[in-house]
Image (cartoon, rainbow, N blue to C red; front, top):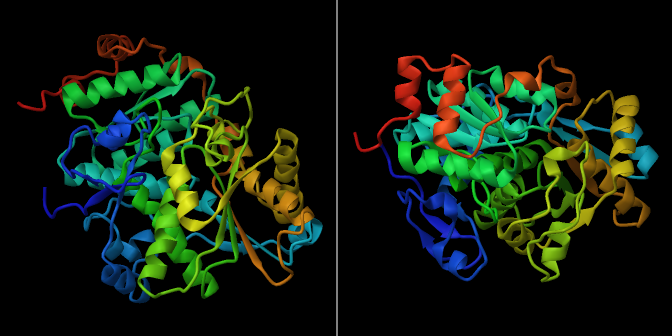
Length: 425
C-alpha cells in the first residue's frame, strides 16, 4: 500500500475515522446511528500546506501542490491550473465591478470533477484496488472512467436512464462498464454489492441518505482554493459555486481553511452555495436534509431532493450561505455567458452566475470586491454523439449486471476476473 493515508475526522462530530475501514463510504458510524449520516474529511499538516503553496513543484497541473494531497503518486491527465477569466461585459450587465470565472471546463474531461477523480483513482490504485465504481448522472462518471483508464483500472458507472445521450456516450468512451438503473438508490445498491463482494473502490457517494464522495478524493478540490490565492494574490472576496452533495464545496472550504491555519492568508472568501431546489438552505435552518420538492431540469447535475451534512458543515465552517436560483435565471445566465463572454456552459455551471446577478441586485457586493464564479462544466457535452440504447438497463443485482455485460459481449475472461474478483483470493 505504500505510505499511510492521512487521518480522517467526521465533518459533523469530529470523531476519528479508520483509514482502512472498508465501509468508510458509509461515513461516521456514530452520526449514522444518530440518524445524521456524515462524511469524513482528511487532514493535512500545516507545514505541508505552506510548503506546497509557497514552493510548488514545476508541474503545471494541480499536482504541483502534491505535498498537500493524500497520495504521493499522481494519476494525471493535466487537470487543474485552470484559467481565471475576467468577465467585464457580463460584470457590467450585472453591476459587478470585478467579476471572474474560474473556468473548470478546460479540464481533460471538461469539468471540475477531474480534480476529484484524479485523486480518488490515485488513492484507489495506491490501496491496491483493481476496479473503481461510481454512481453518476454524467460529469463525475466520465471523469472517474477517464482516470481509471489512465491508471489501468477497470471502471463501473451506474447511471440513470433520463441522463442526456451525450453524457452516456462520454461515460462509455473511456471503456467503463456503464449501466442505467431506475433510481439513485438502486445505483447505490449495485455498487455497494460490488464493493463488499469484489473489492471495488467507491469513487462517488453510494449511500442513501447521501454522505458525499470519498473524503480523500474530495481533497483534490482544495487545489481550487490554492490556485485562486495564487492567481489573485489572495482570496477573492466572494466565491459562488453550484452545489449538490457538497463535495466541491467541502474541498474548497478545506483548502481555504488550511491556507488560513498555515498563515498563508488571513481570511477566507464569502462562499455562496448555489442550488436549484433549496435543500441546503432548508437544512441550514435546522429543518432536516430533505426531501424537498423537485422536478426534471436541464440543470440535472445539481438536481436533488436531499442535501448532506457535509455541505452544511462546510458552510457553517466558513460562514457562508446557500442561495436558491430559478430555472429561468439559469437559462438567462447561460445565454449571457455565451453572448457576452464567449463561454458555453452546461446549465448547472450557469447557476452561480444567476445567483451573482441576483445578489448584485440586492446590493450584496461592494464596488471594489472581487467576485469569482466557479464555472464547473462545458455545454458542449449536450451535443456529443451517442445513444442511450447502448447503455443496458439493469436491476440492482450483481447477477443481472454481469449478465447484461455478457449479453453486450463486454466480458472477456480478463475483464470478468477483474470486475468480479474474490477480494480474499
